[in-house]
Image 1 (cartoon, rainbow, N blue to C red):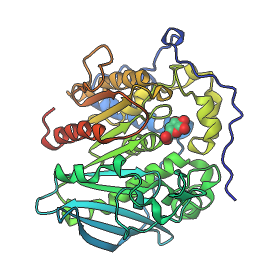
Image 2 (image 1 turned 180 degrees about the horizontal axis):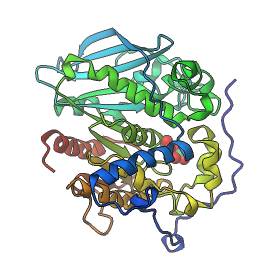
Image 3 (image 1 turned 90 degrees about the vertical axis):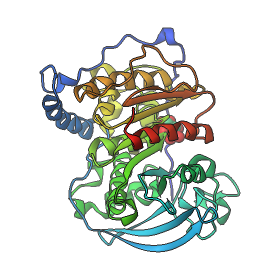
Length: 407
Ligand code: GTR
């Protein structure tokens, strides 16, 4: 039986900017005790910061190699022949089966391929009845598309607005998707059937040494192994994108795996891009109450004691430097603390400057639909917590900058 976390929390979110506590952010050099002025010092600090995140928040990101093999199970032209849809059954250590779906534009070399985790199964990202339906517990549950968190055949294409496959293909880029549930179903006991348990011996890790967010992040890295071996993508940059909890996982994946060329973290909020020390919107207490499996149990102890955390999320973003980063928010998504996401992105600019790359020079948050920044980018739009067609117009501008190298 599936038991969902029920919140016992009495947490009252703050939405008043005048009630945000004063805080001081950790410095990049705190971990080595030296002021960081050059890349070599930062590279040394980076290793230590990664260990801090692995020991305090997300758990270990496995480093042990295991066999990853893939078998193409569906291949067909889609979008009036403008793209090829391919689905691979990927096998991790011959024990875990994952479905990876890719849409690859026809007729031109692919310079950029996107990769993102989906919430609800690969058949939700595009309208095609040949895409296998996930048999896993997924986050979506709207009737009649899902039944007790299991997709029905009616779920096909229900997330297509979020994925905008056609828009991405028209722009000339490839786009890939994998379901987070293929690595770990998103509920507190989900780990029992997921990679943390099934691959415990192969990875030489106990389930409690890592978390759902680490499992999803590591899963992205394994999909990257598959993508790197595809001849169609031999000259492609690979850009990760993720919304909300998948944004958190994408940031953690890119922090650990330098092969990701850029990241788009969409409304990733608490535990993602937003500063933990800012008491605005979601906090450590509600997130660890509702989603205890996302983080190490000890992380919950920092609720109300955020100033004692050795790190804050500008450091997570800094770990992605010098690779291009796009942090995005939505004005009505106050729960994710848009200002905390902006301030974190701005602060991460220090790490980028070590590599001679500029972050965000603007002092204040921009108005809606005015993207700012260079190698670190920020954008906010009107509306709610979701990914929509308008967002993709801005993502594609960022992707074309990554593609051309002109920032
Ligand atoms: C919320 C959670 C957020 C965010 C979101 C999502 O319930 O509080 O941190 O992750 O879910 O993933 O959509």
